[in-house]
Amino acid sequence: MTTTEEPGTETERLRGRIAAELARTRARTALLTEAVDDDDLMRQHSPLMSPLVWDLAHVGNQEELWLVRDVGGREPVRRDIDELYDAFKQPRKDRPTLPLLPPAEARAYLTTVRDKVLDLLDGIRFTDRSLVTDGFAFGMIVQHEQQHDETMLATHQLRSGPAVLDAPAPPEPRARVGDEVLVPAGPFTMGTSTDPWALDNERPAHTVELPAYVIDAAPVTNGRYREFIADGGYDDPRWWSEAGWRHRREAGLTAPLHWRRDGDGWAYRRFGRWSPVRDDEPVVHVCWYEAEAFAAWAGRRLPTEAEWEKAARWDPATGRSRRYPWGDEDPTGEHANLGQRHLRPAPVGAYPAGASPLGVHQLIGDVWEWTSTTFRGHPGFTAFPYREYSEVFFGDDYRVLRGGSFGTDRSACRGTFRNWDYPIRRQIFSGFRCARDARADEAHG
Image (tube, rainbow, N blue to C red; front, top):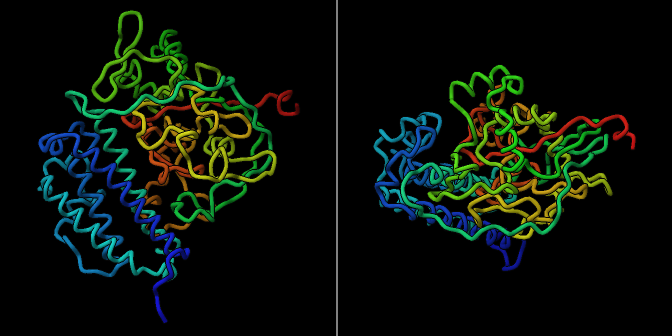
């Protein structure tokens, strides 16, 4: 029995898609690491982040572990570096002191690994075991590298020195966006059991019943956030939780990260360039505690993760949950600000084609949105293919973020995709929107 397929078969199309995604992702990795010199690659720009050269070799090592060795059953390329690039064994703050591969050697290693992966991809059977069904292991590696690309983009935002990245501005607003949207009470399907490249924490699909609630039609903007600052929001413990107020004081928080006073207003340093804060852009680089305090000041709260997902996926006409707010098709440049096409959030109203049926805008892309929910598995969760992807992070330490940012790739962003981080983190591209319980007269129309 032959294992080769005629051109044009489903298997050949999947092989072609995987090869294209691997190449597209590697081109982004190259852009981020070739924009700076070798000294810059080896330097640690913040104790919160790895040197860029660590991320570079780490994505190759994960590709070798999962695709070359596990899926392909091939001999190791560099077993001697496994421990160096183990994210659990090597805390970020310590990585600059490790004997890391220098840039040229790291790039050569990535090329060798990729050649072996493309060779084994030619003969892979996508039916042999669950790890390769629908190309899952390859999709997992694409998403892993794209997640590190976003991390490297955040490192670029933290580095000092002249600007090295450039991109066109996002589109201007094309639609007027209302203040808030009522989401009616009732059940919806949360999570997925069918999306082939969905990761374990997105699974399985399950029904969640929610009361009626109201959610912001767009992320909170710089303009609204400036009102919170001007009203003394950072100086009034009424708006802060006990832990949040303690962190605000210890960290000396007075405004979003990368902001500074500029005359009567504010300026923002974005990838090495200062510019005035634009009021209609979503606020970015705020931690969970800042988002929680703003929401309290505004007489609102942060949405739960389930409320965020229902607003993003539920179609009131059919009762079905879509992959994205606009439908099931993959995002394009008309739908959302993703994939580092632009180097900042787009102003509110820039993506009317990406709105949900209820009229909630910019749920995908622009800024990761903090929710009030701690990170746990969905009911029926099963770790796959390893506990360290999600399960070891479950508990009260992390808050869930949803929706992706301007630095998130489309392969690593769906209506079910879940991110998580510590509530003090703000070097990530994080913003938020607010929600509230529906009043009785709203809930019953």
